[in-house]
Length: 241
Ligand code: HEM
Image (cartoon, rainbow, N blue to C red; front, side, top):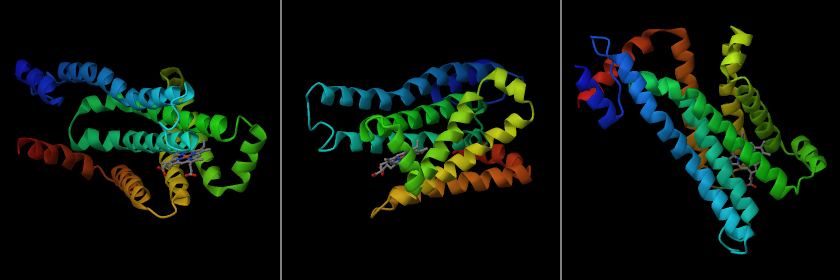
């Protein structure tokens, strides 16, 4: 049984709690395998776009289009929202796909959402505002899409700063309440996106729809344990297909 579980872990990346309790070791094995993989894959966009920016700085103009600063603002924004949606999706996916190891990726993916938002903020401050803090204040006050984006960023900053075990112990029960603000960060990020869009609403609809679904799942999950009880059965039926 144990070897079967391990086979599934390594081949499918899926961990299953065996009746002999082998689920625990499978969980550890899956987490050990998944964590570095997810870490590296999540870092790739930053490395790729950082490399492109370096080539532009070295004189290869045109590599990032006619306005490299704007291109970097857009791609860093896109990766921020992708990571944030992924961070919100970790818990529902953990139940629906019955992959307990996903639980152990929550903090890392959440920190990546913050990391990309931080890069996005630096691109804005450094490349678009030439490091002018006065202009940053004006932008935050005068442009609603910057106001909501900045609020979302501040929430992610607070969550990242309190994401460590020591902070969790220190804050006790209020830690969970604080970390539920991630949904507010998601809604503010969607508002930011909707405000920016001028013609093509596809991204706003996609990410807005996903955040709405994930928020709805969170509310349902909090109110009823039915979803939790239903998910593993649904997931195992789905896996057998
Ligand atoms: C620190 C606060 C923030 C600032 C100053 C900021 C600024 C900007 C700017 C200047 C743009 C380009 C707008 C244009 O097309 O002219 C942008 C786009 C974008 N931002 Fe932000 N942003 C912030 C926070 C966030 C956050 C928290 C997220 C998501 C987690 C986010 C996601 C996006 C996305 C998805 C885009 C659009 C990308 C596209 O259209 O392809 N931003 N942001």
